[in-house]
Length: 202
Image 1 (cartoon, helix red, strand yellow):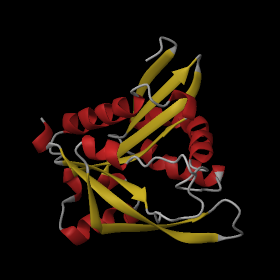
Image 2 (tube, helix red, strand yellow):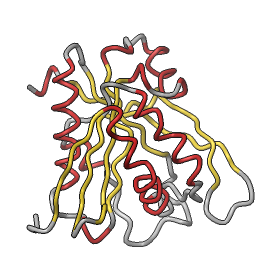
Image 3 (spheres, one colour):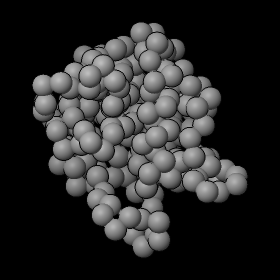
Image 4 (cartoon, one colour):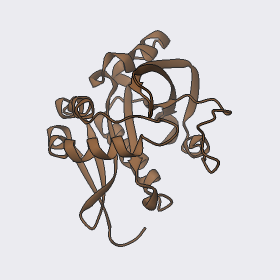
């Protein structure tokens, strides 16, 4: 990792001061495949507000020369929007046992420096510190292998997530609407949950 990269960790209401910066970063990174998200900054700020409302949320920031180039979030599942909770309720997994990892966004120039692992290390350590957490989880958007919008040099994160101990749960889905790049209106997008047992990774 280069010496000019700094990692900051913020929790709960202290996250609010970073909303604008993280909203713009999310919109920029998620514009690329596989999300293809036509960013809406006001929606982004509304989405991020749930982290400030949670006393146990976490924001990990990466700064290079005092500019935010990466961010990762997480909070207890019970503090998320209801759509994220439904697959767990259907499976019978208690809300209070899950720490939900919202996203990790990092500008391309800073990938391959170990920051992806740092994001997961910080969130998993935070989840353990809360007590009672048995799982960490996140959702990944579903895209077909033959999607014509897939760049020729695109490499999925599935292998990385698997090495971290996460297992894709094909029966745990969440559907969210967003406007894809170049499309006139929002469409429903399907995401699949991944689960990681904190108890088996001590």
